[in-house]
Each structure stands twice: as C-alpha cells, then as structure tokens.
Image 1 (tube, one colour):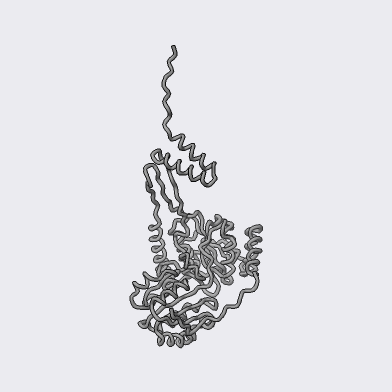
Image 2 (cartoon, rainbow, N blue to C red):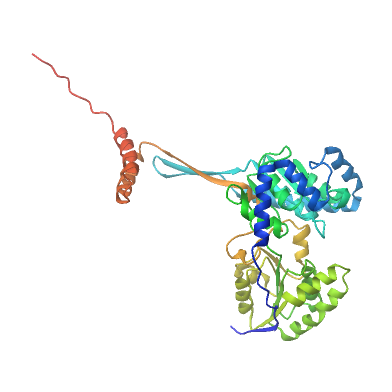
Length: 435
C-alpha cells in the first residue's frame, strides 16, 4: 500500500503523572462518604451553584416557556428521529426459546436495567442533542427510571433549551450537577434517585475518568475520549464541501483530530488550502478551537486506490467515518471499523450529531475496532435460561458427569449423577410369598 502524508499530525506530548486519576479517586472517596452534602459542596466550589440540586417541576415548565418556537420544533424533530431509531433497535432485540433436542429447552430474554444515569455535558456548548441521544434511548429500551445530570451555566442553572430537551426525552429526575459529583450522585442514588445500574453519556476528562473508576459495580457505555473524524473521498467530491466538513468537526477543539484521505492529489491540495480559510470564517472561540485541532492533529493523506483508502480507514477505526465517493454501496459493504458511517455528499456528520436518528455517543480512540456506540442494547441485559425434561436428562447428565470428572470437579459430577439416578423409573420388586 502506498500512502503519502501531505499533512501529518504533530507528536502529542506525553502526559505527565496521574494527577487527574488521583484527583478523581479522592473526589469519589469523599462523595462516597459525604453523600449529598459533599456533592453540594463540590457544586458550590467548582460550578458556583448554590441553588436546588434537583430541578423542580415548576422550573422545567418555566424553562419550556423560554424556548423559542422554532427551536422547540427542531428539538421535537430530532427527538422523534432519535426515539424512532431507538425503538426500531429495541424491536430487533428479541426474546426467543428453542428446543435444542427433545426435552432440552433454552432461551434468552432482553431485560432493561432498573435505573440509568445519563450525563449531559455543558461547558462551551449547550449539548441539546446529547440529552436526546442518551435519555430517549434509555426510555426506548424500557428503563423504568432515568436520572439525568448537567452542570449549571452561571446563575441560571441548566440552560432552558437543554432542560426542555432533557424533560422531553423522558428524564424522571434532573439534577444540576456537573463533573465527578454529577457522575457520583447518579451512581450512589443521591437526591431522591435510585442508584444507577449504568452510567452513559459523554463528558470531559474528569467525567470519563469517574466513569472508568466506577465501572464494575456500575456499568458504563464506554470510556470516551476526544471526538474524531475521518473523511474519505475520490475525485468526484467537491473540495469546498470537504473542507467545511473538516472545519466543522475541528470546531470541537484542540484535542479532536480530523483526518482526510483521498486518491486525488489535486483535491487533496485544494482541501489543504481551503480548510484554514473555512476556519477563519467561524466566530470566536470556535475559530481558535478549530485552528488548534487542524494545525496540531489534522492530517491529509493520499492513497492509490479505494481499497487502500478503505484499509487505511479500518486501521484508524474512527468515531465518525464519512465517505464522499462513487459507488457508496461498495464502501458500505467494505468498511468494517467505525463508530458511525456517513455515506455521500448529501450527508454530513453534523446531521448525525444533532438530528438524524442514529446515536452520536460513539467509540473514540480506535475503540471502534471492537465496539459500537450507545444504543438500546447498552440498557438491556441479554440473559439466558434453560429447562430440562426427561427425554434429554440421561444423555445430558452423563455428558456433564464425564466432563466434570475429567476436569477434576467431583461435586459437579455428583450433582449430575443425582439427576441421572432420579430420572430412572423405580424398580418394581416381585412380591415375596412365604410358606
């Protein structure tokens, strides 16, 4: 394979120490012992929030009244797409039973977790779509109770549009908490919520580390890192459109790589020239964030063929993989490692990020090699069951006993032997007539 880098990412400096991990560990320990008071203290000191942690119903109603009609309509449109896609996923997760042989019946059930905790990030952007993606998906999976948390933005708490989206998506309880304290509150079941069985949703490095440290006793969707994009194209794609798609994803910030690969040198050189121009048109701080991502982490790669492009994409295993090329069916069938695939010039990753329907909480850092993104399946437990009847019992018990003794597990063998003995019909004794 011949691959030429027209632009390469700069080497990333090695991370020093374990300061973040240690900080999160200390915070989680304090939250475990201090409970709600510790969470309130962190909210005051870290987020400047001294108001109610659990959002009252009246506040949610007031927030809805502040959201412009056009934004409400757009949120409703996105919610319907996300909900319908999640419901279709749920319909594909089936219970079944089958008789493997006469008397041996087995099956599986799809059981929702009892409680989910959905983290909705705040920070520089109000992540309305993230609220819909996590909460609506949990609701479609059939989770009985959903807690959602999000950090405050100044004195107003959670921004009205974000609060409206969280309520519309189906959150049973909304907490004004960010960071480690928000994650811990859901895991512990603070502020009138049941302890979460699973924690989902994107967040900053502290949120990701808190989820990682809590994993085990609590489930998580994934340990997500900075978002990334790989864009593949052939000579049929428009360089201006390609450049804007790269600039749009670079907008996420300095830690978010964007990679462009093509088999057309003139197109690659045009994109190299156009991306900085597109970024310069963005408002601040978006422009600066995008320039940092592009300058430090952006790559432009030239390949010889579409097969080389596909192989390159599989090796990167990007979170978002966008193809603007001919014969899209070939690409859909060939590509194997991505969080979500976007096909054609009419499609954009922004559609998937905000409103198209498939979930935007996706694996990063090459985790798409072995897992997909957030879906109803993350909220479901696929459990199995079995039942044995007389026709299957003798052969099953004998095989189990033989294997158990070969493994040195005599107790298991005897547990099978008992079933074998009990399965035999009782011996009828002949009457003993004396005299």
